[in-house]
Length: 133
Image 1 (cartoon, helix red, strand yellow):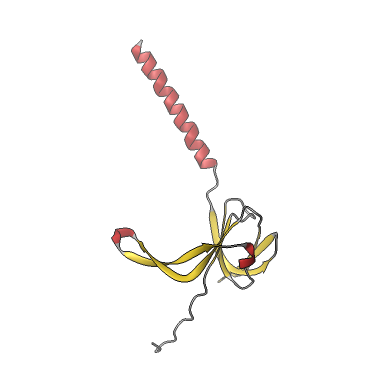
Image 2 (image 1 turned 90 degrees about the horizontal axis):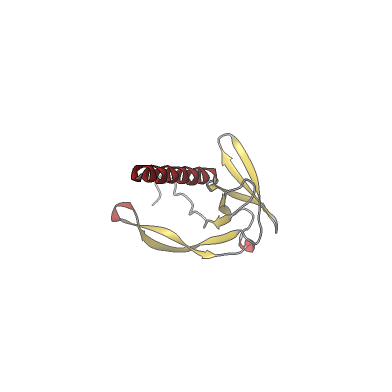
């Protein structure tokens, strides 16, 4: 009798775990792209990625639920793997008005064509030419 109860409980647990794992696999993992804003308005954002195969543009719908953050010119020290410190840019909350054409951004999305978050990256300093300090 006890073996039957234990076996039944074990079987129910296995079914529940299988069901949970299946649901997690169905959820779309967030994806992101980084590129230059070529067009922005109140309802959409077009990001152009440059690569060896040419330019590729992607348009995203934006709305009230789209989170916008902006990198500042200040850095903050954070602990990395192995206990060492590294500097990363500080961020602040922003608005869609902070996203300008020719800005470099990273757009995160779970559903194709719909931006969940936009990170406006600070301008990168120009590279030093060979021989410059």
